[in-house]
Image (tube, rainbow, N blue to C red; front, side, top):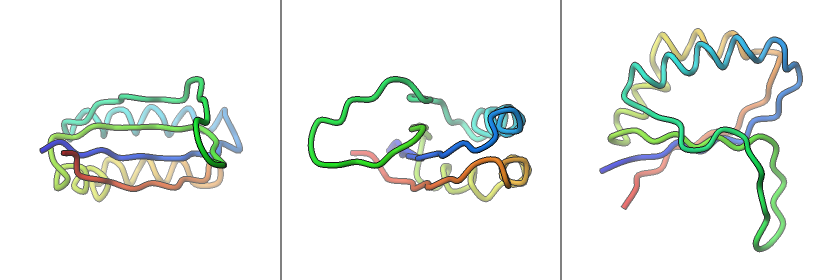
Length: 95
């Protein structure tokens, strides 16, 4: 069953964030993930939602999504992101 990672990213240094994006893309691909949403226009349809940059990733399974997050490849991406973005992220199994 597919799983999804949802992230809300507040970028504070867009120049340095480019390195994170490069490393993250490589890690996502290595663990069988793909980007479904990466930024883009948003429309709040109900309630109040405080958000910045929205990212949605799809992985084959929840376990694979967790492997991606814990991987040495993504650890390097998180290190590159340190000090240039604030991240809120969760993984959820699909139906």
